[in-house]
Length: 162
Image 1 (tube, helix red, strand yellow):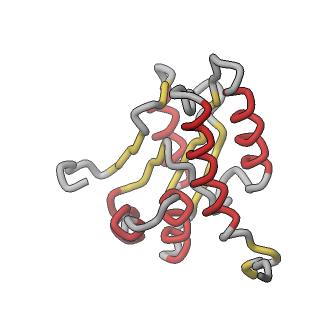
Image 2: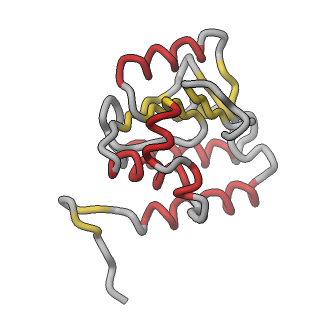
Image 3: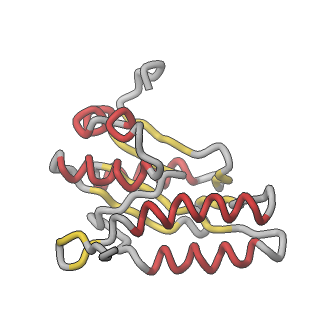
């Protein structure tokens, strides 16, 4: 981030596949909503085992609110003004977190900034876990284990007893 001098910051994962108008659409959405805007890419598959990852991805999407001001962020595509990013603490504030996008959204909300998330069909795609089934298991273990610890019920953290 220090190497950039831009007023608007766009973070895209290296494995994302943006459509030609993706950047234009991301910037227009951010201009309209402000704060942190994110996109969950369309999940493209090539191998049979990847169909299983689509199922888990869909279940994850159904578990969170989407749209303007939803309070959820997806790490593969993020847009923010530099001022809002710095006000929220940026990635430094979540450096020790396994699922930093989840916690970055919390930082924006704690700073009084809106957080919006959308699904990227027709705008942005990616292929998760092209390295095989073992990569998929490790990735989902990381994401679901962390997210499960953050489940809230009516504003309270839901905890299981041991």
